[in-house]
Amino acid sequence: MKEAEIKKIVREGYAERVKTKTSCCGSDNQLQALSKAIGYSDEELGSIPEDANLGLGCGNPIALASLTEGEIVLDLGSGAGFDCFLAANKVGAKGKVIGVDMTLEMLEKARENAEKGGYKNVEFRMGEIENIPAADNSVDVVISNCVINLSPDKPKVFSEAFRVLRPGGRLMVSDIVLLKELPDIIRSSAAAYVGCISGAMMKGEYLKAIKGARFHEVKVLDEAVFPVEFMANDPMAKVTINKMGLAAEAVKEAASSVASIKVQGIKPG
Image 1 (tube, rainbow, N blue to C red):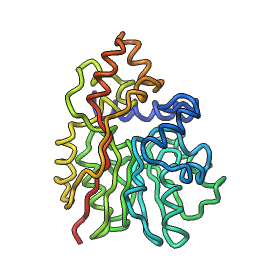
Image 2 (image 1 turned 60 degrees about the vertical axis):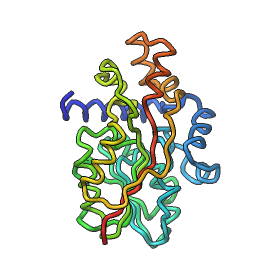
Image 3 (image 1 turned 60 degrees about the horizontal axis):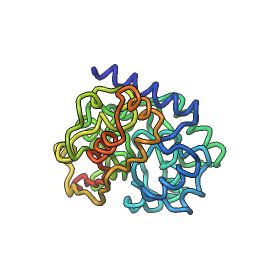
């Protein structure tokens, strides 16, 4: 698929998730259970606006980012604002959180959630993560949660993250990577792309892209096999599975090819 086509598919897919309130996790109970399984605490889940968690993440980048009061944080692919609000609670009134998303419906929902939650230190900007709408050397921390894998130009995303970070700034992302190549039929599926699977890179190539953007101290802080429940319950993935007639064993095999990782990188100071 061409870059413009991929972005159109992703934009439309995530707009649909806002409209229908579908997540990758099925019911509210499944959403809460899987949110906790990927690293969010009950306290965190209870501290943000109810509609902010759409179940679209694959980890908790806030948990490992060591945010401190007064820092400026930028979230790539901020969705309905879930991680932005958690970050805002960490950096306090003296800090600031900037969410960037290319889907209008997500931005509208995030701004609505910010107003409902009374967040004065959060703003949401329309933009693509390959061209971040932020100045050079302007933020302390860049976070992202299961979004960079959707980009058709991941090296450009990491270069942009490097650009906007101040010297000594930190990159902290949770994302999906491949441990082995997926079958072509899944890699070419639009539904699988929106489901965070077919757009993923091999793990080694992903880390190479971060290092290629000149980040230092690039390391995987945590890694887990992608839960098969994500594929089994994700409405987008269900469409893919049904269209291809995949048996349960094939779904399990595809899920075992995918891992969620938490990665850090430091911009030299």
